[in-house]
Every structure is written in C-alpha cells, then in structure tokens.
Image (cartoon, rainbow, N blue to C red):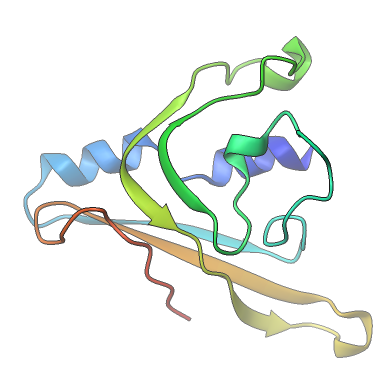
Amino acid sequence: MEYLERRRALVDERLESVVEAGRQVVGYAIILTNDSNYWTVSRKNDPVDAEFRIHEGRVLAGQLSWDPSASQGTTRGRTGSIHLTGSYRLAWRDYSTVDAQKQSGFRCALVRVSGEQSSFPRKMKAYV
C-alpha cells in the first residue's frame, strides 16, 4: 500500500493554490520516512503509481494520474489526477539514524512552493 502513501505525500494543486492566492506566501511539503521505497527507483516495470513516484531526482510536473490498469480498490477515494503548475525536483537527504546496525535511517525531502517571488519553473530546495 506504499503507493497510496506516495500519492498522499505529493505536492499537489491545493498547496499551489494557497501559495498563488497570497503574494508573499510560501508553502512546504515535508516528506519524512524510513521506507527506502520512497527515495529509490522502483524495480517494477510499469507500476500503476509510476506518475506518483517520489524517488531521488524525480521531477514532479504537469498532470499526474494512475495507470489505467490500476484497480478500483487502489484508486478508491483518490481517482482524480493531480495537476501541478510548477516543476519540483525531489532531493532526499539523511535526517537521522535510529540504529546504524539495522540501517534504520530516516530520510526527508522538503519541497518549497512559492509564487511570484520565485522564477518558473519552481524548483524544490532541500533543507536539512
């Protein structure tokens, strides 16, 4: 079910609309996880959530949708596409390590969404 969580973690048009409504407003999407499936490229060929992947270096832009082969159970309650006006490159950074022996480190990505004060395409800036 991690593909559902990836979709929830995305920057979406709601954050962009809040930023666009205010001249000096900046929005942030913060993703913090210890699940390496989020920051690594999938080994699957043609996953149903390919457009919602948020791995290192991925650029989120335009319309993001489920693959047509995604089941109704997978898309229930989240069938609509996400429409982004900006462009966001994901950069993951180490956040903390709980147990180095077990490789139980947390990583984070911080996506900055800004309106008029930044040039387009908008770019993700990673802060740790």
